[in-house]
Length: 371
Image (cartoon, rainbow, N blue to C red; front, side, top):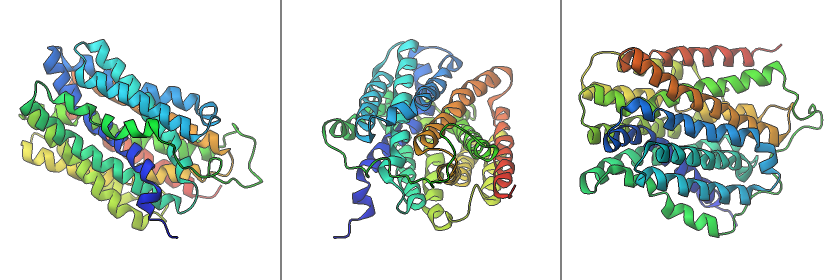
């Protein structure tokens, strides 16, 4: 009997949806958290970095974590995300929100580590893109839900806790995963842990691509507020970035055979970032977020698939390296933009994005060139 890819990967889609929801909520929670607690927003710039620190920890422990199997990893990740989003939704102090960001980051990192293993090698690039597409769809729904809840309840942050609904069954139900980790390695692979220059380049492309992406996830709402939007309106309009990413990843699978971030994607992302830097109205800012999301959409799934195709390392090591790359990017970028927000208008801080994108593209082209 032929199984639908969506049915076969239903658990992957659910955990990726949770990742997208958490990402989509980072910008709104920074704006609404600062408002609710009456603190400057730079004090909450650590939220994104806490998320990234959770990824770093899981990335460092990735091989040991995966040795216990994908099912317990996924279940523990669900428990951590449930705890994290609950604290973010209902917390009434800055340390509580930071702890929530740390817990959801650790949980999402467990999901990121488990996803390639749950998918296996069969049609991996396309299925990874579909899974990350589910993340993008959830990422666009989260800001809209936050804006709606902010109108009808005490705070829109309550909407951040909605992943509890679909993650609770994952905690209690048995998951089906491929035998082992589902990632085959050639017999000629070098000893696990021995990275080549090419492996470092593949890894660094992920770091730069995720860093550029997180500039928008964490500070997109704040840029809209600076452009004149109210807090709840800005929280909702950040969905434009996620809409662009979802559309880009729906189109992306058709060209996943092409390795690495395309020059066109880099150009489109940079155009969006440049518009964000200009003194323009809320409408054009929203369009710019959409353009940036559409451009950057394919960079992470394609660069992740390329890292996992590296024949020189064990599958556990590669999965852990992918989580570690995301953790490095997410830990540094939100705080860096927070510091820049203190030193200059936030709009100019988005000039970091084209630099990161060009760097990712240049390094990726080095990977393509034979030694």
